[in-house]
Length: 169
Image (cartoon, rainbow, N blue to C red; front, side, top):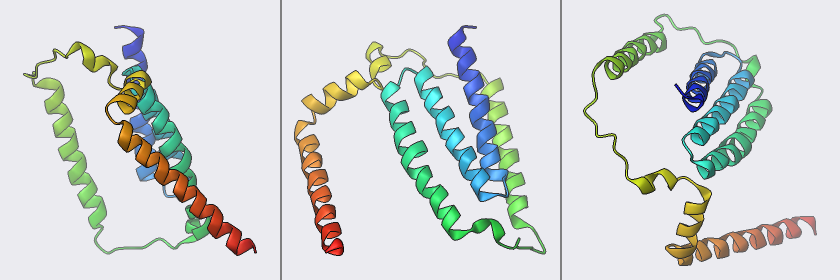
């Protein structure tokens, strides 16, 4: 077993643990921070799979921007002081137990039943997630859509500046 597989296993265990904390936590802020940790563990998994660009996008978009938005919404709504809803019959717990059993059966089947999938990959499939491959693809095959997206982003920034300037004046 190589060091790469060891890191993959550790990151996988931490990602699963943080996902469980995200779902099981009663405190919404703790749940949001566990989700941020989960996103970082997923980025680490992408790095072990040689997908550097996907890992960078994972950290920037999900762990950065979206989770900052989620944490601010949780703090503004003050969800930690809500009363606990009580149900006479807890359907959510029953559904969670059923899904847990089905998931455990699927994991056991995938571990113990031999796979018939062809694991021979094309040699070029190793470099698909790298920044170099994505950059070459963007600037050669998708140059016109890339330029159109750039123009749309610049026009959105100019529109936001114009609207913000009107409110200041």
